[in-house]
Length: 114
Length: 114
Image 1 (cartoon, each protein chain N blue to C red):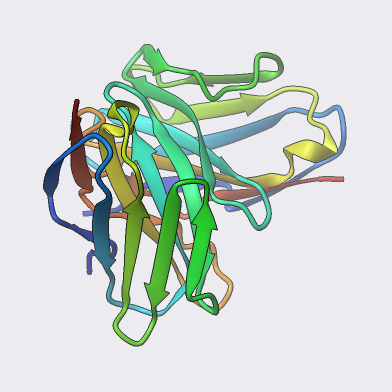
Image 2: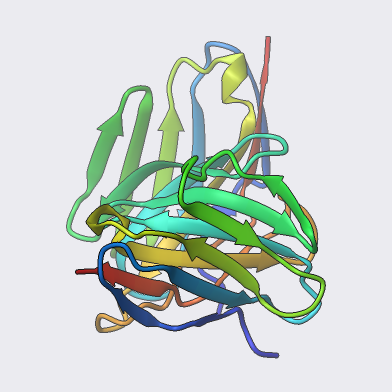
């Protein structure tokens, strides 16, 4: 089954506003990661939150994780035009130590309007 | 429909040897991505290839690392003269088209350099 479903699929906001994206998943996880993908480029890792963590900050990014609801959110504060990109969450499933790989969702396409 | 296949799953090399990691994309997928995951860190993008072409290698170390995706056969990530710092999990992903398509990840190859 598909892990890491982001919501919304697309989001357009004004520069300076905050942007919030959500991610839901289905199975137990070791950690959840958020990635950014700029047009024509590969994925860039933003932040990793472990299953025993509830909140994590990195610069203008804030990630929350609710394992009881199997959901995560990514908040970008004071958005900038350069934040325009697709954002993906990826789950690292708790599979007993095996290397099962990550599953990415389809992403949220964020557009920051000047 | 078999998923992305990587082999070997585990590879042990001594310093100075060469490591060759193979990735067979999902059937019908012509785009391959390689990522490296160091212990306790998220995935870091290395290279994006289509058949016989390197599209984006912005994440590849300048020396010792190379990748190819020939017309026939799997994609190969080659690391020459491995060093201990190369020890990591190397993930391959494939997609049916370009960057904005969901990437499906393989189980990874865990490289250990002694």
